[in-house]
Image (cartoon, rainbow, N blue to C red; front, side):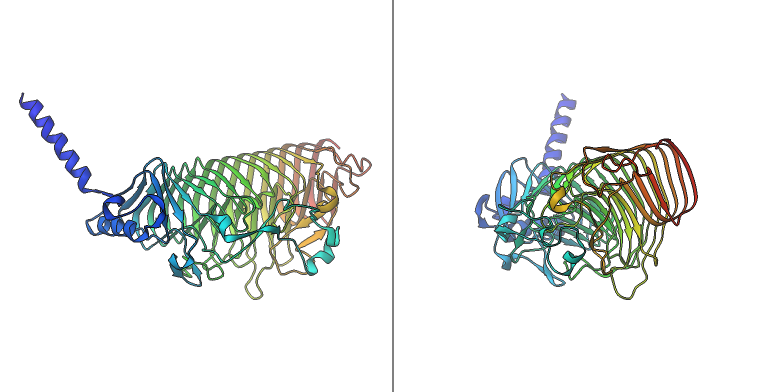
Length: 504
């Protein structure tokens, strides 16, 4: 009898504790009809939870129309299954930071903060777009492209987009300068710009996110982890009209919200068990980086129907080093419209993107167990003022296949963004692998092949220019079926090359 009474008191106590630390947004006046703006009511629940020392802000099922919400330290924002935050189309309801408008969540200088639960954030992205015409490439860059004014031409409809944006809020979910952040299990739909920005943060866990953006929307990145360290990302499925996952070292980014000009390295980031689809890059590392990037690991990743698979880019003083890729499946194709990328499964490049700063280096990049089926080359390129060093491929299978867009898009490389005339998008022969200006490059145990290509610009299995110390071991490589008399391997101004190819 005594034990039963004690147990009842314990259960009552647990219920009281649970009630005391859970803050239901509807108790603070939030409406779940999807029509009534309810930002301030949800914010009141968050503020009360914070003032009381932390706990759970609970969002029951239903639709909640919101502008910008600010999470705070020791607050878990938890969706009930069936709960959806809908981004209002009234831009006056979004918080301004730097030169832009933050989106649905803007959280800064917080610790022990999270968003969890099987709910949704709906960005209403197409409401911020002109949906009747696609953005095309124009200007002097067309002078260097094989097809000139017919490049990526669409005779009717929108093709692969992108559509033109109207005024819009910027990153939909922002965590800036935060410590110990958890994001898990919810879904984001149709962001009008980047979906997530995690910037200047330390100790971040991302698991089980679904990002399902409209593939016509420009700049609709999935998950951008910028100038942050000690991050684990796993079990995410991301579809978006721009880069799916971005790791970079920006201290600032064109006035976007969340950036605080903090100079510190970005390092120790692990990405695993993810499925990615993008109109630009499935994985992009770097860009205009002032902070160095290192110790990144990618494992068990599938990239499909994308414009570029893995894209490592240095255009400013920040360098990218010590990056490992293992167990990766990549399928890329050519696209119409003004998207960055040209069907490359892997692209590694370092060249000038800003006028004054030195150009960083790319070093110690390792690929193992990589399968690529693509409509353009594996492209590895550095200008004379930078360096690519220690790049290894082990146990690989690269196949370059014919594209349905060969006539309007094929036979070009895309190294945008950069400020080097003639090296943005430009005409080129297309081998399966192209390397220029690199040192210590190793290929071991692999196959380089072709599938149905016909155009005369498809050439060698590998073309290397100004490469020092390159080892090709235990490989099968053949020239293009459209140029069968060419050598499988073309070397120009290369030194210290050892070549063990099983089939040439």
